[in-house]
Amino acid sequence: MNITALTPQPRNPGRWNLFLDGAFVFALDGAVVLEHGLAAGQELTAEAAERLRTASAEQDLYAAALHYLAARPRSRAEVRRRLLRARPQRPAPEADTVERVLERLERASLLNDQEFAGFWIENRERFSPRSARALGMELRQRGVDRATVDAATDATRDDERALAAGRQRLRSLVGLDFNAFRERLGGFLLRRGFSYSVARGAVRALWAESHGDETPDGDRAEDGED
Image (cartoon, rainbow, N blue to C red):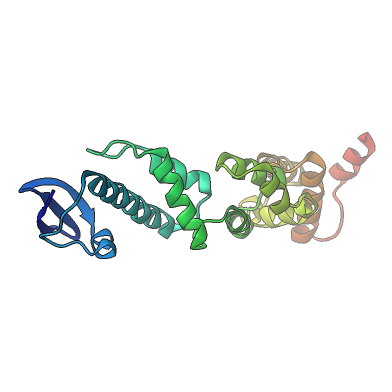
């Protein structure tokens, strides 16, 4: 087969239309054209043409992965799911091609589940603190393996996280008596995945922080029930 024409697409100059023996066969990513030194007049075997098709499909997926990662770091499983889905007028890619793209991203240090877990936890602690258990569940939902999750989460910091989460809610609790303060803030912390004992300790500390050091009578009565 002979390359009779190789022309850039008018609306997408990064892609080139490949014509063999006068007929359009498929579009190629510009990086593949350069890598293989393609030009009109070259001879291609059927096997070489198929390798070009595979290489171009891989490059397309790599570009799609880079676009997906531009917004924020992602887990390997998130990127895999994204790449495997079918797109308009394009079938779902082959799993082997996706795995090669994932390996390229890892070699380029663009994909790393340990770093992703660290990013996720740091972001949560800054904007929306929650318990180590809740953080672990979120990471597992994003496909991070249990060993990586266990290494990244630290339950000994739950007291600190609960205080940080509670401080973000104090403005909405102004003017409440202690029982209402405890009910609303305690419920919020439990929904963030903190244990009852951690939530209770944070409620006491934040009441004292915002109302003075004196422990209210309602809290002393609760202590007597334990």
